[in-house]
Image 1 (cartoon, rainbow, N blue to C red):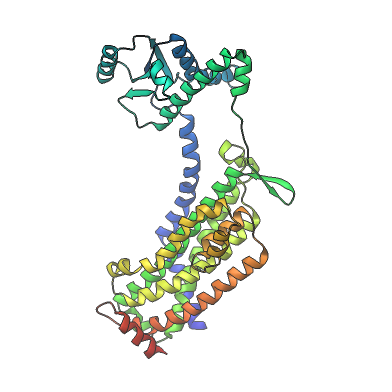
Image 2: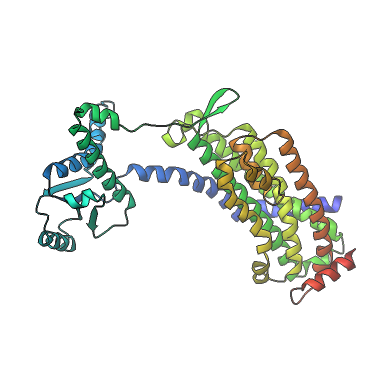
Length: 433
């Protein structure tokens, strides 16, 4: 036990003092925060400036209605700015569109407008002839048509203008039409123990962020175990170490020591995440206003990180004992990576339906459980017997893999040369038995 503790201490201190550990510990919270804050900030910015477009229609009333729809969101934002005297320095954003209307719906006009797009005089034109509207298919021509948000905005404007015109023809007033077509805001609120909890978007963001953190940590530190074994094997340090400790003590020391480094880093990241979820800090940004990391989620994260790490690190240790270089390691690490990558793919349907048969059965598979059972705990905590059964299956699988990997490790760490074949691996297991 003393020898194992010395190896644990060496592996832990060597890594926790490294510059890579310090930099990664500091950068990961910044990266995770930026994935939430930067998209929110960019969504508030008006990129691309004012778009100059031309509406071509047989009926000028239709074109005016579409123009009104396209300008209405900007007008409402300006009105909100005027009605908020508490922000006197707030700049009025530039208009989204500059719109011209023409009723010359001829092929000659179409050709002229295309040339104006080429010359940069206009950004695009929308063809709204009666025939196109009757067929429910209009065409927007522009030099840049990759902004799908703009295409959706134009389509919705045309559709809303037509609906409003038809309702007005049926006798409804303008105010009645506006009230009828006003969008409904829907907030999804999670019920926790009979009380309203976090919103749906905050549950998704927190769950997704912590799942990716779990995924990266398990693979990163499992790979670190393999790299450590390869480095010592290639430098022949293992031959010296094995003169003082057994192969089993060396394997246990490496797995526990590297795992302790990962757990230390994870605790730091979780503390930063909890700080972001405090009411005072979260209220400073609308995207973080409802962010809340539940205590059950923090505990589950620690439990499934430890179990997932031990499960995958035993496989990585066996792979490290089998190969002789990093190049060979990259070729053979896919069997260890594929299960957890597949679990990430399955995390989306599990997030949406945490109590479905798919979620239940896949979360009981030990190689998927670190990700999928954690997702279920975060979204809607399953019955305790399912969590206990999942943990028991992971422990049994880890115990079996540990025995198998230790037998491969015992022989492989002293083998040099080409990578072993399957028949040779069977002989290794036989020799170490």
